[in-house]
Amino acid sequence: MKEDNILHIKSKKFAIRIIHCYKFLADNKKEFILSKQLLRSGTAIGALIAESEFAQSDKDFLNKLYIALKEANETLYWLDLLYETHFLSEEEFSSISKDATEILKLLISITKTLKLK
Image 1: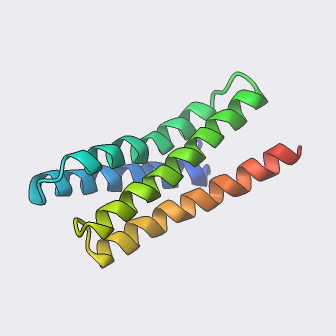
Image 2: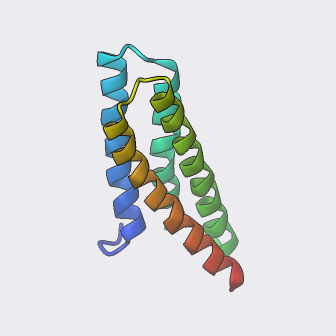
C-alpha cells in the first residue's frame, strides 16, 4: 500500500469501523441478518481498492473501482435500513454514513476522471 493513497487509507479505516459496527450489532442488538450484509459490503470496498492497486490493465483497474463504488452504495443501503429499523441511533448512523458517502464521492470522482482518459 502506498502511504499517500488516501482512498486506500480511508477505505481501510472504514472497514475497521464496519467490523466494530457489526460486532456491536451482533453482540448488543442481537441483529445478525442485515449486519452480516453490512459487514460483507462494507469490507469489500477496501478489498477491491487494494486489489485495484495491482490490476492487470487500466480496464481491470477501472472495473475494480466500479465494483467498489457499487459496494459503497450497497453499504449505504444497509446502513439506512439498520437506522430506519432502529438498530443504529441517529448519531451512529450519521457518523458512519458520512464516512461511506465520502468514500463513495471519491470513487465517483476517480472513476469519472479515468473514464474520460
